[in-house]
Length: 317
Image 1 (cartoon, one colour):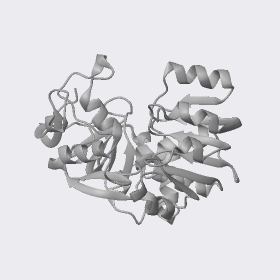
Image 2 (cartoon, helix red, strand yellow):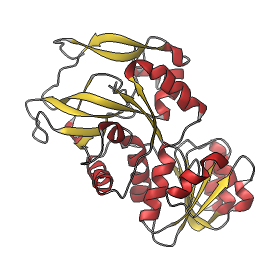
Image 3 (cartoon, one colour):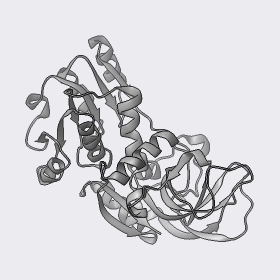
Image 4 (cartoon, helix red, strand yellow):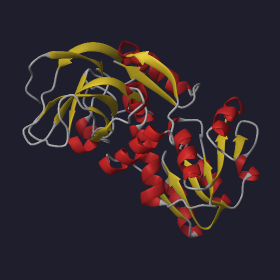
């Protein structure tokens, strides 16, 4: 544990379960070690891993409650460790911390290595900046490190109105792709407004019969979506699975000779700085559907699990 100088407010859960296990508590404020920065959090993004790991322990060797959820933050540097030169007190920063290890972002303060932050994009709020890191890094790493997206390619993005999906649509269009998204009918105007060329209502249309000849599938849903997407992918195409692959999926894609892989996002200062540039110039816009005070984290989790929103949810601190 870190040496403690004072307490802070944070959301904690002392057992795994429904959103109601989240509670606001006074906990020890961390102190930055020699290679760390202490950031006063202004806003924390809410992402699917936050609620999924609130329900079940993963992995079991370092998930013993009480725990504080969250990885995405935007805030102001309060202190720097002895060996930190990248930032100084007063700098506005944003970042995704320590993923997939626990980072405790739903709190008034966080500590992390400086390379897990970048300067907050100019011209956007802390709420908007906190909504960006995990979904934007997921898409950036998918399109840069896993499967390059080039002009004229056909890209199918499942859950195109969600946190990852709505940024994937924009980044694919910035790279010149023809973008097809799946989303509920009520969210089609939103997805088209992001630049999507086609939108399919998966509740009334089987996307597997409405789409063909795609170069890349970005799946954020899981379940049977990878299997149903396989016949749609052209030779030489690829699947990027954000929500997971079953052994059967891996076998089917391998036999078909289609590139595939599970993407687990990781902290990435260079990519985050590139995302910040796009956000600052207005080329990449994060949509925040709802903002909750820290004390209402349980309401934010319940809404995220319902799926009844577009873009991102954020806690303001």
